[in-house]
Image (cartoon, rainbow, N blue to C red; front, side):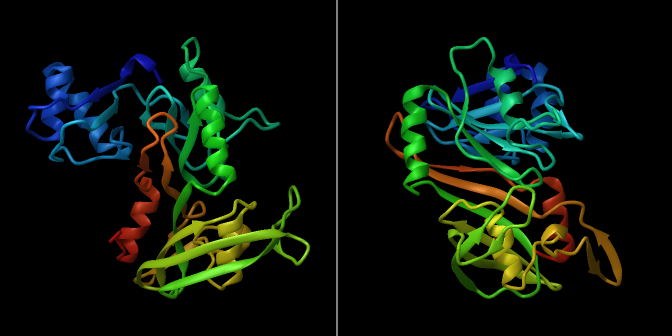
Length: 302
């Protein structure tokens, strides 16, 4: 990904129009095709939320980020996308299949790719949390020492609210709270065990159809595989999460639909900005495979 192709704009007072018109005004008609591609493929964000609608009306002061680069930073034909960036922090959407940090096998990873992306600049990215390799969604980086200290404290004090989306088997209850202790050992399954560490997750059903539920998960602790284990132990394994008993196939209209990875997506982060001290919400739309399985099951976000 060419850093010169990532452009940041702010909507000035007096502009009255939609997102496409604004981008054409800023970038010129020669970039019309690139703007259309970026919007269609989720390469545009407004105030930290991925936006695909070209007719989205803008308000004064909103921050726009667009990636006009080619399909770079690719891992198995997936992309890592910039959702929000300023002088203090960077939020990206990690694709499924890409590890968060370097491993022994020297595969590409999100942390290294972002460091390469920002190499040579004044900002040095510091990863603040991780996602499982096959979990897609938001990753947050601090871009200086002060921001790192403040954001790390927010994570440590459980002040950052994380919200995930999951597609699970069965008709999930309207709400469910799980409070137990989880024991994790490297290379093995995480288990509920009295000698484990406290693990807390709140769940809410957003939709149900055709034997599949769309569930919102809000973890209050960060244990290994926490959401996956809590759902599996309650009898609602995540589709595609074969490691914890999830099905690899979804039966719809008598035909099997293959689920190639666990359908878990880090959807939203709510935090206090380390520079302005104002609350902010960052959102990454579910990736194409997740959205496709939702539509096939007759589900949609409320």
